Amino acid sequence: MSEDKQDLISQIKSLQNRVKIEEKLDGSVRDSTNSSVEGRKIETGGHHRRKKKVVERMKGTVNHHFKRYVALKVMYFGQRFYGFASEAQMEPTIESEIFTALEKTRLLVADKKESQYSRCGRTDKGVSSVGQVISLYLRSNLKESSTNNHSSGESVQGEQIEGEIDYVRVLNRALPKDIRIIGWCPVPIDFSARFSCLLREYKYFFWRENLNLLAMESAGKKFVGEHDFRNFCKMDAVNVHNYKRCVTSFEVSPCDMRFEGNQLCAFKIQGSAFLWHQVRCMVAVLFMIGQDHESVDVIDALLDTERTPRKPQYTMALEIPLVLRSCEFEGLKFTCSSGAGQALRVHLQNECQMYQLQAAIFHEALLSCLPLAKDQSLLKNGTVKKKVSHIPLFSRPTEPSYEERRAKLDLKREVEGHIG
Image (cartoon, rainbow, N blue to C red):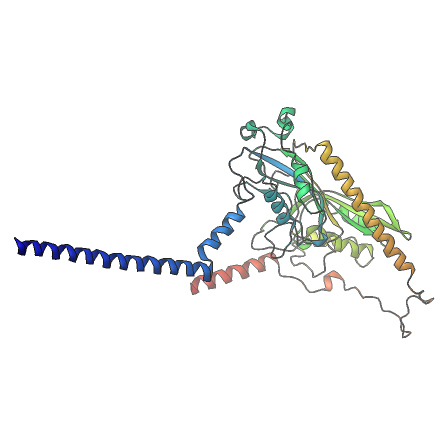
């Protein structure tokens, strides 16, 4: 019995020692694992930092509230922006500023794609607008609004507006001073700010100087109707294959503004849709006609793509004077609360007064300049300043035609396919 008892005691001690060894090993593994994890956090910030970024990006979206599909009418002054669309490589853009404001005010219910976001026009760097339209789902105060989106803007009743978030007031408090929301409207879920638009209107401002306005107006009327405008745009042969567009109206009119006897004027151009840089290219050729460098008939020749398949090289008109004035839709009636509307008017009046003060300072600086010599065309060294000679459009180098661009693209794809 004593031997059996000793064997039993030795087995128990052996088991106890084994348990202690395993506990030590397990503790060292945990310690090393924790230290390595902490080391990774310290050294790279890895998963924790990425997750934080995701959380931060989603802070402005609220998906547990009722939502409503709405159209917003947007005003912006484009001088400091790299265009409207946030897909541009440079910042800031108008679109990025709008979405920043939407996130700050927690009006977003999802990301851009899930919000069914669309925009009417994609204006270029420096271009302004007083009537751009976008549409997307936004947070709503009305429980019934999430099931009421099948009603059109025309049939919106008072109770659908009353009690709703004052989108104009809320967003304008968060937006920079050169972007403003000027109205909103409930829209049906199949609405698209781009494809539902019936009419777009642009204005291009310019100083009359010595331009031949009658010739410019006569030439501008030739744009009215459906034409192939490939010689009046920046061609995108990859994505655009139809260059026919319909211009419905063209006008030249004086504005209620003068500077030292020089009259401010504007082109007003309406159409269902426009190509990339189309308006600025049209205006550039009209200026050549107004300066008597080209005849009115040059418009006919450039619109005849069989006769002129390749666009002559010319510089398009400046972007700053161009304004997207309005985007028209069937049945949409934009609304704005009286308080938000009054705040918008006060803001714009203050901005106008500030710009007029700046203009007064510049005018004072102009008056302070030294007087010019009697012959203002003479330079300091006594030589006559040469005028820039105009090269006729049809004597200039031309860009590749659409067919040549497509053939080059097809060849490139074929070569890449063989290499692949």
